[in-house]
Length: 452
Ligand code: NAD
Ligand code: UGA
Image (cartoon, rainbow, N blue to C red; front, side, top):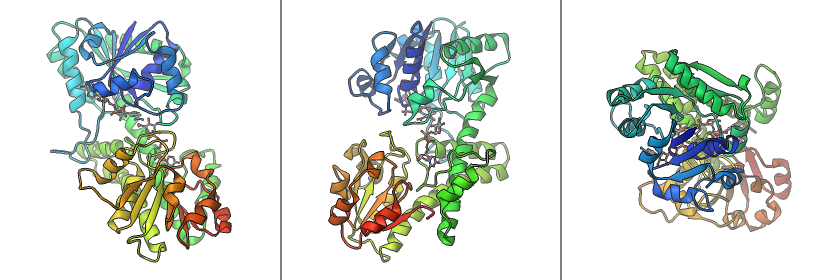
């Protein structure tokens, strides 16, 4: 069997590497129009940082796993074509700021129709609005030239930073297909691919629309838990309750469960916000404004939490941070990834710069130019923003530290040394609740957490 995947990003690269590893008899080709990215996949420094990924790629690349820019050739030879291209929020026209921009999906569908030379199974791996398969089928059918196409939905549930572990032992694999003989045969073929390593009872099969919708709903539920605990964090700060203690107390109820109850400076990442806004747009489209408003609240709470954190820094530093140096530790949207998309750190830096602070950022994995690009966008250069080569360098002469990402390194810093180099009184704002605040207070810090 031959598989190809169009889109060599955070999803396409790791998922295909795992299939290649677990199913050595399957030939896997990952293609992308971005030549630089493909070059990196073929080099010793992969384009994404993900624990364990290097090892999987080293074992498979050049054997049954290949990266190239030859999209057309890969389409011709593949039996199954995964589509893992980006589906960002639309920034223009109808639905701007909410709807998913499906132009990459549509363009791939047209390319497949044009270059297919036989029957193909197309697998939606990207996260897309419910009923997108209909659009893909429509485009394929109108350009089929006698070839038969089956479209399946197989959303990805991996989280960045734990992608390899998630792919190795997924909670479930979800595959949606049409209830036609052709659709069911295609679905079984994809089940066989995953059955190389995923127990059958973890492979869920549904109709197309349930599968497409389940992906959006899964992300909405996960993000909703974070916004719920973050809303409670504000109440904790007002009342003297401790949000970690509340999370532990409620999470011990097996109906609630302990996961995704970590209060934070706000969720980031390329998907939660995008997918909820997409869900909101769908609800509005289908005439369900109350449902739309309910889910939109999750994003609004997240925005509020990010600004609330920056506002607390300003308020605590005697209501002004103008010309004060603030060290922002961590820029990735979570630990163990170099991905900065929608990271809460972006909003924190922008808010502090708007207050005329001097912001110095340190992240162990994110390059300086990327930090500058994320914070400043297309705007002019900002001399108040600088990037440090270590946490100690960032903290030197700073009035405050703000922990934005929960990197393990930040727990192990020599805080006595950090304190000695800072302006007094030295403040620390732990946006991830990873530090031992009482110990920091013993060292002389004025220390604050989220919901504490
Ligand atoms: P990404 O931006 O990292 O990668 C997408 C890749 O597709 C890019 O390299 C781009 O060059 C390529 N591409 C776009 N159009 C193309 C075309 N016509 N031909 C060839 N290549 C093309 O995106 P990602 O983070 O991998 O996400 C992909 C999809 O998976 C999105 O829909 C996302 O919502 C979903 N998803 C992402 C994650 C995650 O953790 N990042 C997890 C689950 C689902
Ligand atoms: C999330 C989902 O967990 C994946 O299942 C899904 O496949 C993926 O989105 C996607 O569709 O892209 P990801 O965004 O990579 O994965 O990472 P998460 O671990 O979910 O973290 C998202 C954000 O929430 C991070 O900023 C994280 O710090 C924050 N978070 C997470 C909290 O603030 N508190 C928590 O308790 C958990």
